[in-house]
Structures are given as structure tokens and as C-alpha cells.
Length: 115
Length: 117
Image 1 (tube, each protein chain N blue to C red):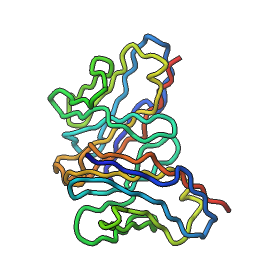
Image 2: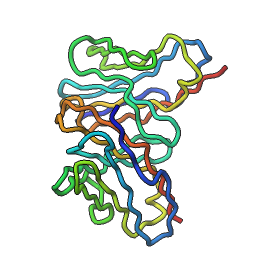
Image 3: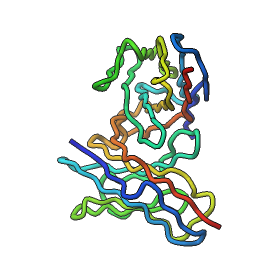
Image 4: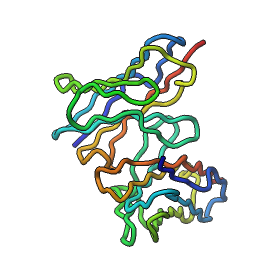
């Protein structure tokens, strides 16, 4: 069975500050890991994903995440927050080819950015 | 880029009526579409997997007679909430995968907010 835990349902940062959203996973097989962003009343947009290979993954909008197997973590970071980054972020895990619909989502972290 | 259109974006209906939500892949063919439900401040829960031309596969605990899914073409899947009740009020999101199989990325619709009064 797989699961995802996102630490902190709400994170608040100042504009220009570092963004760190935490995600830990549990998986009995090599995981495929994803970060999605959701703006109010909208669907999900893929930020980045890890399948195999390089453990540091770069995504859109300046976000990146590092897969750390020893820590079972896939934390999302961005060096400098922008007001437009305010949204809900979901970490997800899948055991299939990177694109299966049976993604297991975390409960989400709402990011607020203060001016 | 690939676009998934979901319609309507919001709907209010009376208890006991049925509501149909459409999910269309606008510029690609989708062999597989997925339906999710999202409660306020909660994560997305996969409800069912819909494959074109075959019956949908429902997740455990999802009533297939309550949530009817039809995937009649490679660009359209529909979710019908039958005899809706207030507890069915939620945000429903679809996603679609192209013809490339598991290596094709998922594209999400913008969701439908259903309110049952």
C-alpha cells in the first residue's frame, strides 16, 4: 500500500522568502512522485514529477523537489516566493508508469504569500 | 498543450434530481479518463477509472449505481450523479490520459462544483 503525508496544512511565507513544502511517502515498491498545484475552483496542474534517474527534479514556475529515498521524502522548494505562488499544493505517489490515474494524493498544503 | 474541458464548472440542483458532468479532451484522444471527488480542505479521492468503450472501474466504496460513468468516445466521458442528495455536494474533477498509455501525462479538467439543496 502507498500513502502520502504532507506536513503542515497551511504554510505562510513572505514574498521573496524560501518556500518549503514537505512531503513524505510510504511505498513498498519504487515510487513515482508528483507535485501538483491547484488554484481556487480549478483542477490540478502538474508542477514536476520524479520517476527514475536524477533525484533533483526541476519543474515549472521555479519549483524543484528532491527525492530522498533514505528519508522517504520529496519536499518541494522554491528559492523566492512570488505572490502568484499562493495556491494549494498536493504531493502524490503512484507505483505505475508515472501517469496512472490511481495516484494517491496527500491532503494538500495551502501556501499563502504575504507582501 | 493538451486541454481537458469540464462542464459545467458549477451546478446547483435540488435533492432527488440527477446531474450530468462532462469531461472532454479537446485536442487529444483519451483512452482513459479518471474521476475524482474532492471535499473541502481535503485531498482528491479517485472515484473511478473510465476506459473508452468499456465499463468503468469503480474504487471501493463508490456506488456505481449512484455515480454513472459513460465513456462513449475517445474525447468524452460523463459522470452522472443520480438522485443527488446534499451529501453529494462536492468538487468533482476529471483527468484524461492520451493514447500513449502509461507514459502519457495526465491532464486535469478545471473541476465542477456541485451543490445539492
